[in-house]
Length: 344
Image (cartoon, rainbow, N blue to C red; front, top):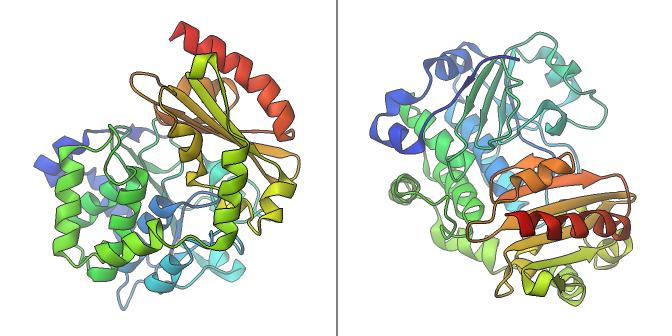
């Protein structure tokens, strides 16, 4: 495992030179880099990936983005449209001279397509790994992980500013989208003074705050609304209301007109219940595999809980995947979560 550079987001805000020099130097040497994020990318993954690609595009450098078919939710489909970054083909993976992996904690989670075996696609080429997940495994050649940062987009802003790269209005919008969503509208404990300062800088640079609000928060399609009906109907509480969870089977998700790519912030339904200290969402986007989203409130962390089931993430926002349908996953996870909360 390569050495992982860590740091403080606040320290970086005070002194942009705190961005590890190796990160910028390694990217600068690349001429045909592919930007990569995690499978089922959220706005932070897409925003950081596209912002990096746009800011490093030059006459002698053409970054492109890895985005397997069907991996982007309907709600976030506007982001690749706005970004206008070419999507990597098989030939591009062969000719790339390096990779920049963003918002991704381990190589197995890279969104490079199912046909590429874990790590084989790297083939000895440099990998710059920029992330804010505390459980990052340091799989890159150069790793920059700041677990306290509220989003990877916040880190990318600091890196671009340190490298004196141009951040135009579209790039600013990509970064703002990632920051806004990963902090739940700048409402989570991970929202630092540094994050708010960066958000202000992005607005000054032309981030389309109003349109982003419409697209990210006030533009639900009927299929997404129908899926929310399922999540609300299936929500249950245990441990005297201290744990809330919901489920959606493969048939329920697809019956609503959605897919695995559309599973994201539905966790906020059980999370919104008063008194819930742990919220969980069990979804079967792909038949026979249950994705579990964990969220903690107050002083309750869920990273250890997710790790027990082979997952990872952040202290209060984590996830895991079990090879079983939702009912079996609930039977395994909920009792353990009750015990875990009692020990917390």
